[in-house]
Length: 352
Ligand SMILES: Cc1cc2nc3c(=O)[nH]c(=O)nc-3n(C[C@H](O)[C@H](O)[C@H](O)COP(=O)(O)O)c2cc1C
Image (cartoon, rainbow, N blue to C red):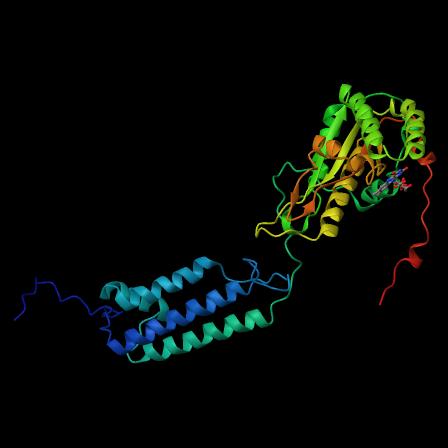
């Protein structure tokens, strides 16, 4: 008999204490399959999402991150080889509630199917967004010039000849920057075949002498032609005094990473692109110049001249070549006054 002072027994709990499920091998296997499916689905969705460059059409789609994929893989592994407690915890998280042990496999299979379905549907119906612009080298990189500014630079670049130079010097940093711009020319095979030799100051005077002597060697057997060439050269000498620097333009034969030579015409084009870059940069900085191809197949092909400018190499019989001389100077004339005409674009372009 119970004493009237003794306490009554505690009431039964409203919510029954959770009983940990004891997993059968079968349910463990099903759960593992679930997380493996989830991992595969998430990885697939991620790799197709364009987040990591997966989208081949350049369109970026929303997708899960590698972290979720990684978590699913980790869960699958834990279920397979982990201690029973952690297995149980994961299953509780998955099912989100207490439920009869027998229902767990069905929920897991359903979950796996849903995960796969949602992933594939999200890939199939994702709205393409514009590709992410390339990250600039640093946050301090200036913005690109506007379309109009770029067009004006291209349109107003002019070949300006020494007769229109003032004789004022072009600062060395200006020429260095123009050469840096040249170095960003496109290059098939990444051979970067452009080489430049800058003649300024006393070296410029020496170049005139070198040119004269090379012409004498070249035309030694043709006295009439030689006399005419020297007369023309001497007449131009006064004009050339106004040139601040002359840059020898060299096409070097450079094997690519596989040891192969690119076609000669491609290397010549790459050098031409480099020269155009140089010219445009000079224009943007307020200086002028022009590309002279004078003597390219004459005095500039003389062995001593080629040696002087480092164009005396050859690879498998393919020779380096001097492609001309870029004259750099300062002008006080209005650049708009320099002759520039182009034929109709419609006669040069066909749209199909
Ligand atoms: C590969 C190449 C070689 C050139 N060689 C000479 C040359 O030897 N003498 C010359 O007066 N101009 C030469 N020029 C410059 C052209 O005369 C000039 O580009 C043309 O008149 C068009 O003028 P613009 O550059 O002002 O548009 C050359 C241009 C190029 C692209």
